[in-house]
Length: 490
Ligand code: ADP
Image 1 (cartoon, rainbow, N blue to C red):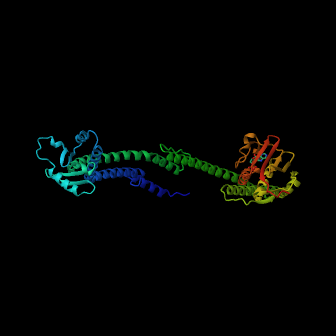
Image 2: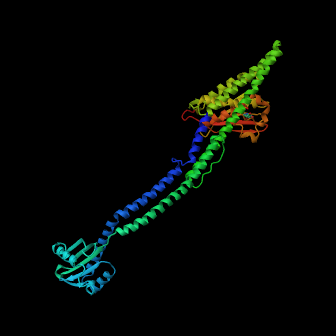
């Protein structure tokens, strides 16, 4: 990936510049804003309800209270101590209660008060009586201006018991003006609003910075990652989502570090492996030019070295290509049933020259024809790599055994040699690319170090089991298994 250094720098500076002032698109600013707006909204609703609806609400409460008292007195009527109980109710309310039977008052607190010679609600009482006479259900409820003050009066009348008794309950409740109360409330609300908004702004600023701090920390660390500082650890605090994000980023950072190390190793190994044969080619070519050009025997020996090295280079490049294609996932399997015995025989055939000229023996033991399911080309490459290694590292007996057996519905393919074997400590590493077991250093020029890595990748693609059993000085057996194609076993 290519970064435009100049632009990156500019963008970064731009962001930095924004941080000096308030960044209106930042999470912390938005959190602060929403929290403060919420406080403004709540206090706004409070203002509206208190100032606009208070008057109606007060009146409504008064009506409810009058109704409640009327119901209570109605229930008490006709029972013992009726008037004493009404007196108790009268003491506990600012309502004026009057009860008359046949037009004669039987209860009215002002009757005993000698200072009020004229009945306070005489006019209202008259109106109520007139209205009650007209009423069908025996109750009247009115709001009327009181003559002695500027208040309104809530007046209520109801026939107690049956209409024959002629007993009527009158209730008068003054509706005091709420304007002064509203003024007091308004003042208090002003203080409450100011305090609430300041508190909301301060607290939300604190909380939003607390919430966004771990995100900012992660961002700071991520910038280090962007600079190629792989393998760093991200720290997430307080919130599970952020801790999870930090863990994911840490994992990414570690994976990036691995990939970067792998890339560096690969370049180092490839350049090293390519350089050796190229140096050989160059020095032998110089040798032919300067020394052996005229000596046909020496010249052809030197030319043979050049040809061998060129072959090796060819092998190395094609192995590297195969491996990188398998590992990058470009190669896909083309699975089909094929006869593994036939495939193995074809590979053994390519070693005929070696067998004839250099005295190698390849023994093949396969009792049956086995049709397996897999990608024939790739399995052939696996067999070829294993056979190649067995021949390379076989012992003085120059014999390699290949066997195919059936076990648990699968075939087990084995290549055995009686060579030097592989030290136990090297066994798990031989499948890595460019790994060469310690006992085989002398032979390094013969291999690319990629053969077993290709085997491992191709067999893994097949999801096949594979492995090696080896004993120092006795030899090694490399094996893998493949599922037998059902109904095709002959
Ligand atoms: P190379 O090209 O070096 O053979 P491989 O990936 O095929 O690379 O093998 C990796 C290493 O495993 C070899 O260098 C060798 O040390 C060891 N090895 C592989 N096959 C055998 C074998 N049959 N006997 C002994 N050692 C082996």
